[in-house]
Structure formats: C-alpha cells, structure tokens
Amino acid sequence: MLKTRTLMVAFLALWIVAACSPTQAPTPMAQVTISTAGVISPTPAACILQPVITPTRPAKTPRSTELDPSAGLHMTGRPQEIDLTSYRLKVTGKVDHPLSLTYDELRCMPKVQTSDVLICPGAFEDEANWAGASLMYILDMAGIHPGATSLALIGADNYSSSVSLQQARTGKNHLAYEWEGKPLPILHGFPVRAVFPSLQGNRWVKWLVEIQVE
Image (cartoon, rainbow, N blue to C red):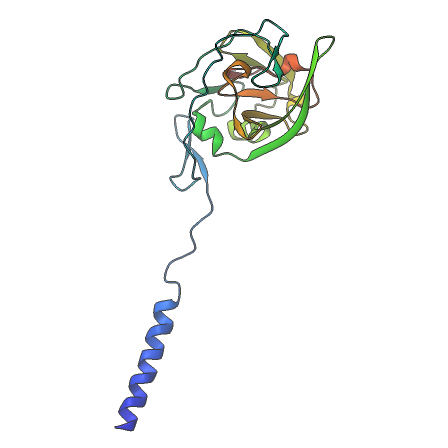
C-alpha cells in the first residue's frame, strides 16, 4: 500500500512538472513584412494600438505665421482634413519596394521621440515634443536605389519640399503622428508631418502624403 502511494505521488509530481513546462516556442517579437505588392503589412501581433480620435478643427483658423492658441504653435499652410480610413503615405521613385502605408502601419513601426524647436527664420520658433515613425526605417524598408540623391516630400495641400538623402539619413528624423503625446492637431499636420530636428521648418512638410525618392 505504501509503495503504491509513493508511486502515485511520484507520478503526480512528474505530471505537474510537465504541465507547468512550456510546450510551445516563445511568442516571436513583432515583425513587419512586405507583400508582393510592396505594401507593408504588420503581423496581427505586431503591436497593440489605442484607437485614435480625429482631432477637431478650431472654429477660427489663425492667419499665416499667427499663433494658434489651442496648440501653442504658429500657423503655416492651408489646413487639410484627411480621412484616416483612406489615408496612405506613399513612398515612390528610386526604390526597390514602393510603399503605401496606413496610419496604423506607421504607428506600428519603430518610434522616435524628440523635443525640438521648429524654426522659421524671422517669423517664429516653436518648441514642442514630437513622436513618430523613424524615417530611416521606412527608407531602408523601401530599399533605396544606389543612384538616389534626395527626397521630395509632398503634402495634401500640394506644398512640397526636398532634402538630400544624406540629410534624411542623419539624426532623429521621423514622420510625426504625435505632438505632446497626442495626435497632431489638424492645423499642424494631422495625420502625419515630417520632423527634421536639424533643418528649418520649411522642410517639416505637414499633411504628408508622399515621399518621392529622386
């Protein structure tokens, strides 16, 4: 009887060890893949995102270079109201993989956070905290051709600016979708604007919809 009880206890102990031991490989880290169409598709477990509520537009739009009191930033450009469900950021030109990125796909990418001063010489200087997708990460994912030398950044308001590829690949340049920990205000680039900490504000294209690699 004692021997039977001892065997039962030993069996139970082995069963507990087996039950508590991992039977599956650890969950892999989030990955981002490129489909054959060149569109970035995060895996379902790539990241967990909080819903974003599109910011509302103030009743009054400040004049050019006038301070927007709701954000503490100065106004430039023609405000655009963009639907997140149809928004895409395109990366085209001299690339191996043309990209068409949704807002959430950008939010799932490596995040860069900076505290910078946006300078428009002779007009204003705005200091704020910005955060968004690493520009270098996006360029590497697109696969830049060896002969490429610059980027043209285009906003939904048809404003465009250019930076050299060397400038684009330095520092903490990113495509900001957050300002002070919140979605960008509509007047200041929602859903996405470029942030180049070492360059003047005319390169910080707002309402960014396309990056052409030239």
